[in-house]
Image (cartoon, rainbow, N blue to C red):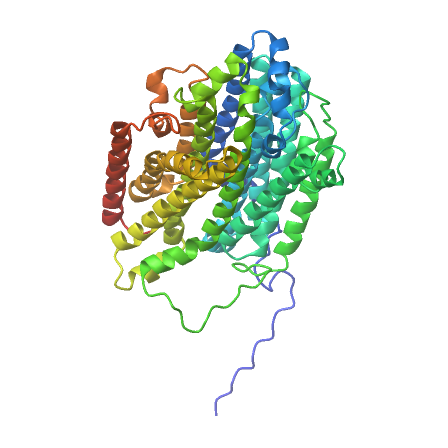
Length: 552
């Protein structure tokens, strides 16, 4: 008979129960260095571009009005227009410095919010959705470290951009105290959206859901501010401005009251939101969100790759369409007041540089605004096209390609949706602007036809931007994010290059520089066909690269 050994009792000696657990923030420094390395192009390029837009716009205004006393009478009536105030906010004062930065204070801050959103989402929810955070978590990395690294990097990007903009503004001759207030205004908006995006990344389990929450909050904040500003100084509706973080930043009034103490409000909101994000992080599992995902039907109705792509893009397209309806209404309503602020030949010259010199000054105004609408449409097209890369890195494309669908059919579905979506939103903005302007002039049919044709004529330039995205996805997928820097470069060269007196061969790099001056001018079919050929060639090169390379 053999004796059986008794089971060994677990050791009670300390330190033998298992591997030591890391603290919540262990590895934050290394993750921060990794994230900064990955964004070493995106963040500096965005910061320099925003600084250049502020400095270039200010310098152009100084050149336009060598005598500052001429600026105030020429612009006072226009800047009080409710529609213009809804877009850009109220001007802080009638000083030349405030007039020189009228458009860039709010819109530049919104772009800084977008930069903060991109950085935080990329290094939190996107990394988690693609499975890389799970791999990092298997090492000596704390639970809170990825979120902490993303928040720190985005905070540094916001503060660095604000400081750089202050330096650039002072360098071109803007007042020092007002420039510091401008940096504070941007910091209030950017820091708040660092916190908003950090919270959004905890609520949902997908990067697309994070985008919905963060960008939806930005749109809501912009709308609240616009309603509050447009309601009048004595209206109870002015309280809506204080409900919006963009309204807080607006209260700084750079080059006016210069209320730098508003930074305290932004820092408090930033701290509270970041703390909430960390608290929500502890309440969810890795790969999941605090809000549960809604289960789909037992049996799906989608049968084609195109149907799947359209379904995924549906929410994005609805949001952009609503935004372009509002934009069209604002642009159309401003048409009647254009003549009142172009009595100054300098203002008329600036508008012609931006929108072309053909037709009446009202045509020139519409051409300028529709070009900016085309740049927004290009951003929509890029967002829809770069989803190919997101689908690839997340592994979802493998399930699609496991069916009878080919790579080219899958890519073509995304490209077709992007092309159709951009055409739709441009047609919407032209139609709504034409209806509003036609109601004023009594010629609805003529106004709609002119403005829809003018907006759709910008499509070839938009297609070039989409083609650049396809090229990067197909040939150098790791650099897909650079397409946003390319779009910003096209914006600066095509729209601000003429008023900054850049050489024509430099501005010609932007596809928007080759658009016909519509409405009012003649359609230049040669340039438009050239843009179509360039877009087709870039798209073909990108698809060829996608067909030959490995799927991530």
